[in-house]
Amino acid sequence: MGNPEEAERAEEQRTGPVLRRREQIQPGTTDQRLLDTEGDSEWVHTDPWRVMRIQSEFVEGFGALAELPSAISVFGSARTAPGSPEYQAGIRIGRALADAGFAVITGGGPGSMEAANKGASEARGISVGLGIELPFEQGLNPHVDIGVNFRYFFVRKTMFVKYAQGFVVLPGGLGTLDELFEALTLVQTRKVTRFPIVLFGTDYWSGLVEWLRDTVIAQGKASEHDLLLFHVTDDVDEAVALVTKETGPPVPAPFEGYEA
Image (tube, rainbow, N blue to C red; front, side, top):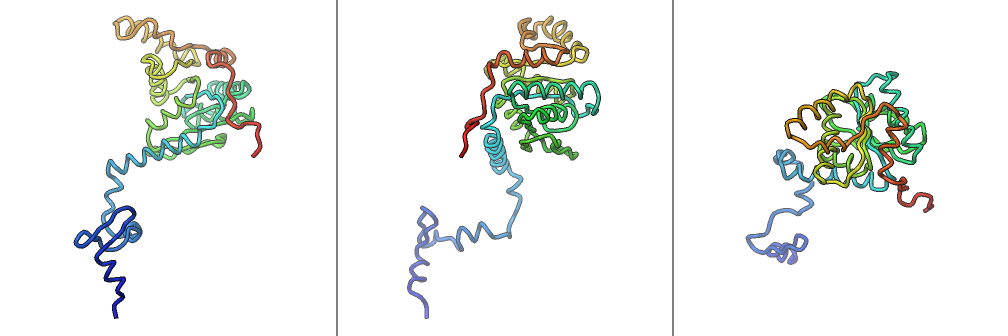
């Protein structure tokens, strides 16, 4: 014998705030359709779904880094050999920044990034690594205290800029140059409040500086004033002083010193 309530439900269906009647009633329930493993899975490769993944990366990044104290982003090559002069400079820079009260943000990989994270960690500072999904496995170096891995370069680069008060750029390759010119462009076009950019290693960067001055600026593709957007040095103390002097005293992390 049929239940009269079943007959009534067959004529009316409520799914959340939506009411459906007669021919507009859909079979099954929302949970049933959610949990059903059958059907086409191509939707996970569509642009609308990618937008959701991009949004989730921003949410994860903002959530992980929102309570950082004042920070400096340190860029440099993943191919820098441990024990090399550049690696040792990265350690000293990371340590000096931490001693000055700044968190240190890197790409989280090996080489110069690892060196800066190591220096910050040894000085008991906050050592942050923002990793990136690559075709070859790289992973976050062991000196990272707070690590976030990203699928998308542009989301990761937003985090480098949003949570840093300055950049120190050690010798590096195409990725380092990408991050450097992104920062220079943002400052030049006033898309961000100006922050200091320091290139460490005069021998390495002198060719780039000469090309900017003698070719790019000489041909009118940039302004002479653009050379003032960055500093070049070989001295660790000077690099730290240059990158922090325009930022003012470090801002502590929110709620620092308070107990729950």
